[in-house]
Image (cartoon, rainbow, N blue to C red):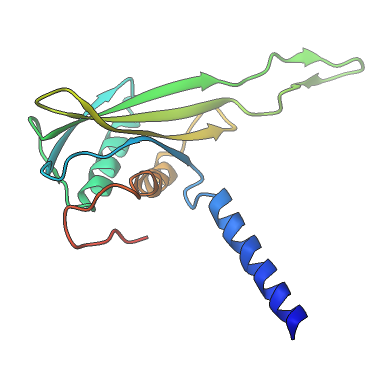
Length: 173
């Protein structure tokens, strides 16, 4: 009986650790600073350097994720000014021709890392009240926008997980 309990505990621990190590969206998330005052209830989004094809997908999914915490999106002059900044990091290794034949890439096939830095500032004082980011390594030079939309919604919901609720509603998973 004691051995069965140890195995059960070990399996539970492995399941918990693997759940923490992976994201359901395939996009990593980081929170650097939290949280805005409770009297902030509206926000507007500014996007910087987000590619044109990706901008509407990113902004709309961020709006949905933050609205699920009781915050109201507005066109301008929200209590919070949210900036979404796209950063591109090229991870392509220089290719070389091997000793015998063919081209090889010592760094593998990874092409780039896309990061969206999120910063929330009090619209009146300019003070930073929340910051974080979502990031993903892409093995190819292009993105599938349809798949990205769902992944962005999950990633934004994940990164905002500790954000204080403005209603009694809890975001769905």
